[in-house]
Amino acid sequence: MKFKLPAVAAMVLALTLAAPAFSQSRLKDASANRELSDQIMALVVKGDIEGGLRLAKPYLVIPESEVDTLIGQTKMQLPALEMRFGKPVGVEYIGQDKVGEHVMRIVQICRYEKHLMRWNFYFYRTPTGWVLNAFHFDDKLQALF
Image (cartoon, rainbow, N blue to C red; front, side, top):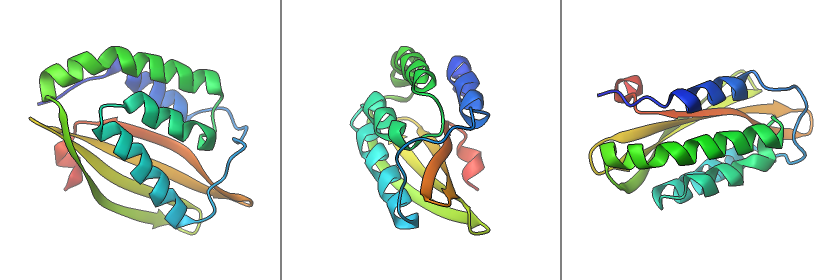
């Protein structure tokens, strides 16, 4: 089963290739990165993906206008997601890994009645703290193995 979010996928690519200007807010350490991803996922499982994305906004390294565009496009896709997968029923932390001392990925899943969405959060450590460099979500169950 494959669920496509073409508009959102394009925005995720834009997030990854975003403008170099850093956001104002920084996370102090790797445990704060985990806390942020947990807080985002707590909103997602309540059906508030918009709230989760807004929570991430101050830590993202992209202009606010691009985040707002992503939020708008995601909101338009939510009815199709619920129709196909059902309502959210839980969140599960899958794991994290680091590449060197400056890059970290946290993987979590949001479980729905019929399927799941995998969320990848990518953090980058700057000289003044961690920022959320990029994130994406998809329904690629097989990518968890």
